[in-house]
Image (cartoon, rainbow, N blue to C red; front, side, top):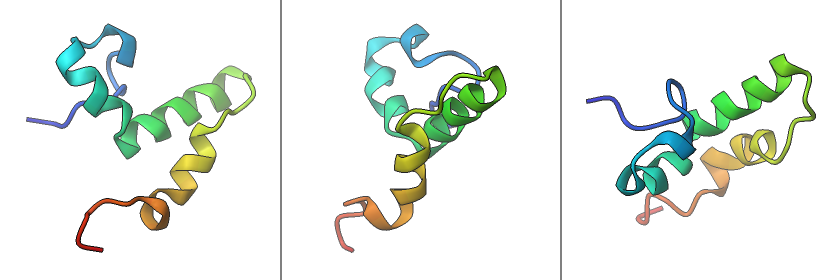
Length: 63
């Protein structure tokens, strides 16, 4: 099973039990940033959070 993200369906369209998980996936951040770049909209915080994801995430907790 692929992990939930906004790649195929916007996060708002996902069931509530998957929405929280999908909102915190790095793929969702990348997809949202690419959608904003290709639509001409200003890129929001998604690109910043995506850039900080590997080093700035408190997960996994054993780090």
